[in-house]
Length: 164
Image (cartoon, rainbow, N blue to C red; front, side):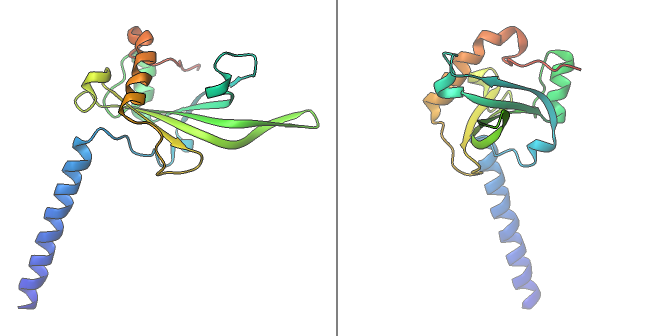
């Protein structure tokens, strides 16, 4: 009887995991990119107060790419599985030294041509501060992200480029 119970628990666990995995793959969400700061650093920039984009994007930006995305930077076409992270931090200046401050948010784009077909194959998400769970984009905001990225259609909807 104990063997039967163990088998039943195992079978139930496998079924539940399969359902959860299928559901997570069919949704339009983009997962938090664990370990992204160990990926390839693409570039950094600062948007200062004189920029029209300052209110939303003011601060120090770092852009990171996973290995799939690095293929895209080389070929101009980003394969499924590509993930890019736009890490936005406040800027602190003290005694003439400018450094990173607190993280404002990270924006994540993930390439999956089937899941995100209506937005050029890219899914969009934003995580507030250092949170791995607090998402700030709703469906309309994600569509707005794509509308902006559409200007880069010839570059597979990606603004940044990798400097060797």
